[in-house]
Length: 186
Image (cartoon, rainbow, N blue to C red; front, side, top):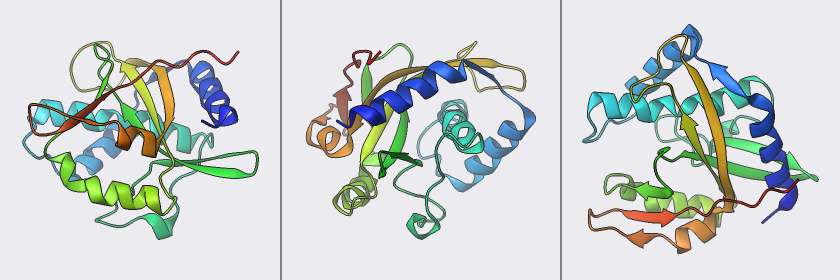
């Protein structure tokens, strides 16, 4: 693991504090919902899942990370990673993963397993290097609304291939991985 990458991301999480949801995010969320596939999720579950985009969108907007490169965006606007972080003259391509605040597991649903080859291809080609696992603490267990105050907790930053190698089949047809909590670098 690149310690400077973990330190950089740890500092971001320490510095951003709480975010207050604004109309701009709600508008972005609604556009993303129209573009993304709901699958078999209820509308509330789907909306809460899309709410997790607030962190990566904020980090890009504030210039703390860079947006995906245009040449890496495809599949109806999708990209295998969410942001680029440059540390010590090296780019890390990161996929942010929000895990439930009551869990320690990263779950890949049966529906999401269909993208497994695409993700592995991204890892193999070097455009997905790490996963950043975090929890979003929202005021209520419901979709975000204007004025909601959310807090983010960094769980870990892990090399993407390590995560893929350690996914365990679940009884629901998907896979899961217990995300270890990182040890503070400061």
